Length: 365
Image (cartoon, rainbow, N blue to C red; front, side, top):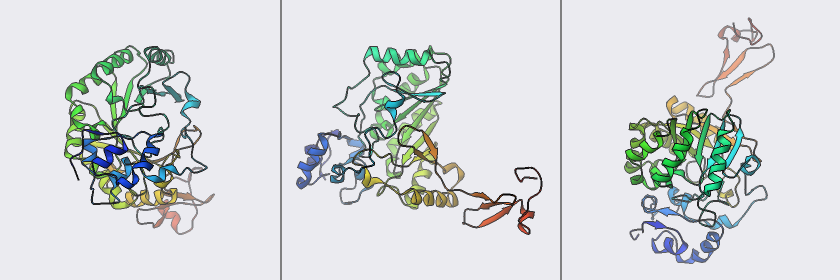
């Protein structure tokens, strides 16, 4: 494979880099007319060109399956628009808001739930008036405890723009937590510096950075070094991943991914069930399979490595945990707890003989 250019943004770029056969150029150009293409050189270098099922390529190189849409897919699967009182703000939960600063990413995931609104065909950034209105909304709502910067990828903004936003948020006393969701440490690791960490900390808030990664190979040495710049500056990091067919829907890959996060001092946070965005059905893993994987993960790796398996209920109803159940009970009987090997045990233990319980209404002594 030829050395990839700094950024791949078109079907022609992918063909030239050896990541797309010439026979698929026209179909991918049709996809690109609707959904943005984007790989940095760092991400392209992670792809094994000899593997037709490479899990990194599957995430970023367009697939002809994207031209097939399913009846249940929707342009706004998480219902952001239903909870957007002003441009750039999503206020679904009482104590936190999303602040969507831009629609640009360094890389474009083929399964993105905002794929209909991100990319070069959308406005790059909030206008100055829209940003002022969004910050004003946050200031006017004292119940807002946490602001989550997203988009697009907020760390593609210049240090100057980020410093301005930090200063505006610093002035809002009731905001205590600032969280940023990003792929930049993987896609453009040299962009992450101690100086950038200092810009985020200038907000005067408790800052968290959530890293999106779906395969252990994404946690390259360069990516880990970039994350260390944040962590060593006092910014804790969390992970978020999406359960994706052909990428991480096996226990070996999930185990390596979650361990890689922890080894890099990143706490596994969310493993998302795929959001039903248009043309993403080929990534769907059945929930039953996801629950089984979570049960296996519980049995084989440290508690430090356990993410929450989450479903963002389509239509804007919010996130709910959908992991396996370990506790059952019949009315008036003992609790039955399932261990990591799938065996059931009565609790309290003495209830095992009779199945009866003693003590309070909750069945506990």
